[in-house]
Length: 202
Image 1 (cartoon, rainbow, N blue to C red):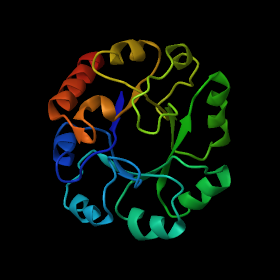
Image 2 (image 1 turned 180 degrees about the vertical axis):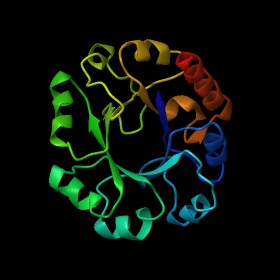
Image 3 (image 1 turned 135 degrees about the vertical axis):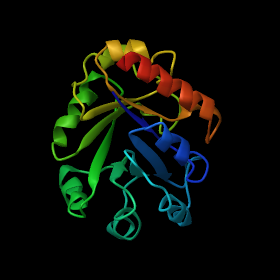
């Protein structure tokens, strides 16, 4: 099982997630988001020993200049939430960075969009809420492709992750469900979720 936690604060949350061996740590570069981080905070991220964790820059339609100046050399992955085509993904991969493509799922026909991105390293099936806590439709979870390349986001928590896992998902992306206050991760919730995942693994 793999875990990605998104919307992290560079100074407050990162060391905990590294210590808990969270697989991917996501940092939001989107000014409309309550979890948006400032570019200067990238300097804080440079100070960490990432150990087995990977850093992800979460973006909406990033420009080549942004990728070149801020993502390359500082992040292991870029996560795309915009209108990127397969060709645009190839351009971005040309910078030498791995790509996560988010696909918003409203109904079953949306799932097949993942076939348009065979060049992506990870496909993230997400709700259309753009960081609002919307639950992913349970009847669609079983229709998602299986495998370590496919991740699921949408109101995943300690309370429901076992049921979601039983539906075939083994890559979980969390954000708002690990918060008590908008934009502020609750460290006890993070620890509880990791403990639950470790239980399921055993």
